[in-house]
Image 1 (cartoon, rainbow, N blue to C red):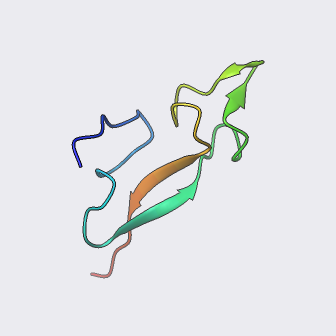
Image 2 (cartoon, rainbow, N blue to C red):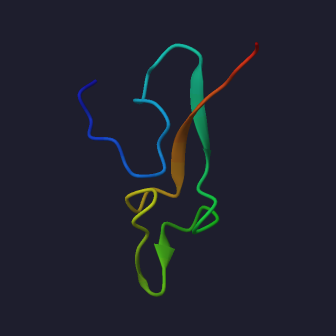
Length: 53
């Protein structure tokens, strides 16, 4: 569970109350401009907090 966070991640993977979402920069492709997306680390997904309030 010590995976490095990508710039687009709000929380670490596996954090209670979080989930995956499609990367808003590459739209899930994992690539931008023919290279690996730096926002999601090339995975196409980011980790977000799912919140109530």
